[in-house]
Amino acid sequence: MFTRLSSKSIFLILSILIIGMSMSGLQKSKEADLVLMNGKIVTVDKTKPEAQALAVSGDLIVAVGSNEEIKPYITQETKVIDLEGKLAIPGFIDAHGHFTGLGRSKMVLNFMEVKNWDEVIEMTKEAVNKAKPGEWIFGRGWHQEKWDKTPEPNIDGLPFHHSLSKVSPDNPVLFSHASGHASFANAKAMELAGITKDTRDPPGGEIVKDSEGNPVGAFRETAQRLLRKASNDYLESRTPEEIRVEQLRGIELAVLECLANGVTSFHDAGSSFETIDLFKKVAEEGKLGIRLWVMIRDSNERLKERLSEYKIIGLANNHLTARAIKRSLDGALGPHGAWLLKPYEDLPSSSGLNTSTIESVKETARIAIMNDFQLCVHAIGDRANRETLNIFEEAFKAHPDKKDLRWRNEHSQHLHSDDIPRFGQLGVIASMQGIHCTSDAPYVIKRLGKERAEEGAYVWQKLMKSGAVICNGTDVPVEYIDPIACFHATVTRKLKDGTVFYPDQRMSRQEALRSYTLNGAYAAFQEDILGSLTPGKLADITILSKDIMTVPDDEILEAEVVCTIVGGKVCYKK
Image 1 (cartoon, rainbow, N blue to C red):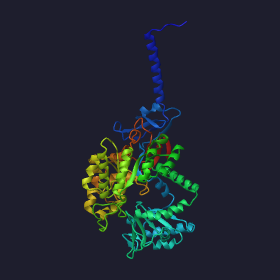
Image 2: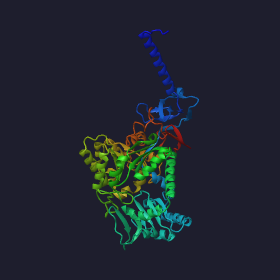
Image 3: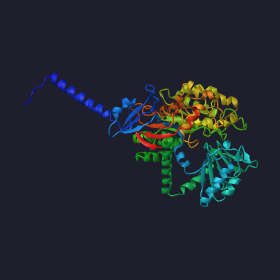
């Protein structure tokens, strides 16, 4: 027998059921997989700047607060990390680096710490003793401006190849400059590449030659491509399996290096479609241990053909995104490759090198804006920066319907005062590297003179006052992927000799941390999921041994990464 219920009874029963379901959901939401307790948590979230604890469920942050507020989230299954007063911050976002370059740098000779050319020769000699005749020897990281003595003979501080060729007569040698904007080759490498005194400079490049017109072994900017075919022929002579193994090993090494340095997201400054295919495979297999955001670097012709197939947003649980295009307008300041409005102070015969035509980059801008891709242009010299802003402004005016484009000027190192306000006016992101400032400072004034250096070298405060967003990074492997050193450079601008490079342009510690976290997320259209320790965002967290927000300046460099968490999983622990 059924009893007829009144509408009031039905409403009461439904209310009880709804409340019960809500309570069940609330109880479920309070079950955390990971909890951090007893720490100083700097969130980079203005609504709650600091906390003691946070809770993670799955790969998301579910709560941030005091120890007492977070304790209810702990169950028998919850992993609890006692911070013991240590600092936890959003995972560092390296907003400009070269991911495969980072991996490769761990598999070749490393000249980052050599004191002079003699040490390069000695390291080469040791490598030759271990190599087979005909085997190419690769290396990177040399920088003639950082050596303790100038090699003799030299041109513009660059050595001649003869001493190198003497220790490597049967092995081709190719060594990249620390900036990546110059290379040095021995006689065997130049022989295989067909380079003689009659070989002409390519557009945007220079073969450095002696007074008699003989190549000394140094190749600036696009001239490096003259060596590339010979070295690529060698690399491609290996079996497909050998090539694949090396590529995968490079990715693995890059991931490990990022995690060990507290980097949870990495903006890759230029990879081909083929390399992105490899990233996709690794990501889909669950082996891309960080979040990789990629700028596509390929010819305009190939971009037109394939770009529509390669807009990748948040693949493999937000581990791979490709939504930007990379171009370059000039080289680097160290090898006199930065494109300047006026000649170099220490090389009056040169104003640097324009490495891509303005028209070709304008065409890339058209391709990018029509396909809703960001455009990221490498620009270091004041002329390159002005031309980049001109290209951006022209594209924006031609498409007034396109809003919030977040196009990026990669490096923005040396600016004319007239161009600084344009970053804020145009909404152009200045993607800069704090560590470049202190690394380059010893020769910036020599290259540019005091007036230009003070006016526009690494002018972070001037750019921020214009309304520009600055994101930070290392340009690894040009510099080490060390966010602590980069953070220190950003807040102190202190050189090794104790001098400070235009201190009025230093960032505060809050500004510097934001540039390395939330601003990096913004520069990638990822601020809704990354960059701050906010409930609902991905649980990417870096734990440090020292409080870099409060310790004396010199103690910042003593801080170490204790733990790196990506998506709520501990991926690195010291």
